[in-house]
Length: 319
Image (cartoon, rainbow, N blue to C red; front, side, top):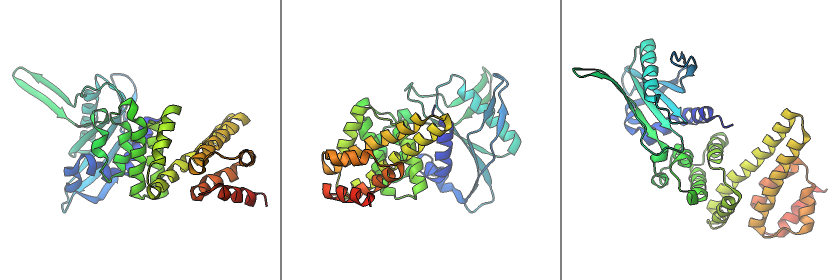
């Protein structure tokens, strides 16, 4: 099961300024960015359901050049719920009561369907009196066009395009464009892995889609393809690690073997794209490689240009 709350919280807290720049530029321009301080998790008892609710993200900020501060509350909502606007009002009321500060509420709706606009207001009124009119900023990803974000040099755009409205036949193209944008940003390895993992989680391709995706990579200019291939290779390495971890946790050797076989298969596909069909002798040698050498091969093959490079590398491993 995908932990949507954790994924979105990690993404938004890591790239909080970039999130504001992309979707809330007025807020981004108004605050002192050095003042951003994420607050400890807030827990609230939901009296209507008896459940305990946790605020996704709460950041204290100050206006630039002033001592005046306020809170930015961000919720990532992975499903459409009829009473969600009311719940956001309850969050607002309790946070306002506790902190006695202005609060800027934001919701990122990340579900795939429905496509209709989600409510972003909660009100209580009589014929002669408007008691409450509470509004929050709504960012509904499935109503955004991913093409509008292609030219945004922003890591949040590279990640969230994967959750925008995508026609079924566009899925391989969108995944490629997410990685292409990510590769141009040249982030550090940890942040690159965070975004690439987010994209891979939400744009898992079927085998036919994977073939379209790989063919599209092959058509890219070599210099640009290199950066994308490094990201794809990192997925392969994480797959090995995850396969091993699952096997250890379950105490089943089969879990380890499945992880290794999956990544060995990916190595063969990468080699086929780089060099053409892999000779049977080389295939046999690769099938015998232990985990550590498979990982090394996954990195080394990016520099191969002929079958001789592969043969030389395999011969080196036997020494």
